[in-house]
Amino acid sequence: MKILVADDDPTTLETLTRALERWNLEVVPATNGREAWEILQQPDPPRMALLDWMMPDMEGLEVCRLARAKASLQTCYLILLTSRNSKDDLMMGLLSGADDYVTKPFHAGELWARIEVGRRVLSIQQSLADRVRDLTEAMAQIKSLRGLLPICAYCKKIREGQDYWRQVESYLAEHTEATFTHGICPDCFSRVMNENAKSNTPPKAA
Image 1 (cartoon, rainbow, N blue to C red):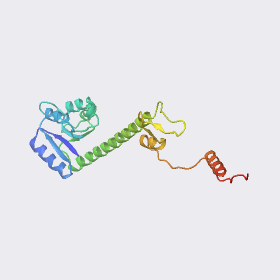
Image 2 (cartoon, rainbow, N blue to C red; image 1 turned 45 degrees about the horizontal axis):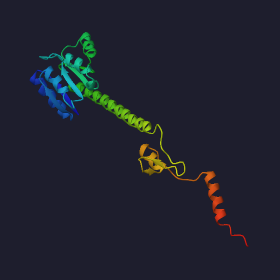
Image 3 (spheres, helix red, strand yellow; image 1 turned 180 degrees about the vertical axis):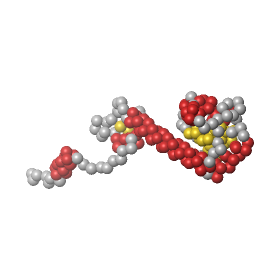
Image 4 (cartoon, rainbow, N blue to C red; image 1 turned 135 degrees about the horizontal axis):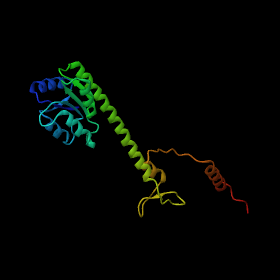
């Protein structure tokens, strides 16, 4: 998974990059807030961002606010990293749109744990998005079967084109997730048996 790391201090940025790469994360570095915001607006941006609060050009808080105002970044997991550790600072950071908050100097174990929380949240979000997509596709299939279907009153084939007819089970199997087994209903069984009995009746003597 890609993670954006934005910090204007080169030493901190290098330390964070090495730690995150050891945890099998692909680090996308940024040296200020404006650069971080430009990265988040690119196609296929990182799904997680670790943002320093105090940065030149644009603070981490402002990056959080802008990200939360953009529909495509609503699910991006944002972690603020700062030496500001008062309760008011924590509240301000979370209300600006951050999902989590890590204070400097950071503890590697704590940072790893908070990133793992973010991974779980992103995994759940992806699972829900996949389910919504599947349901949307299923609803589209259901809607495609609404309306009038031209069907033969005798053989029950469905017309798909001007001169093309196909069996009803073939049509439904393509447009739904239904599968078919074939049997014979009681009425048809009685009719077929009667027809067979008549065909097998020997002719009457003259």
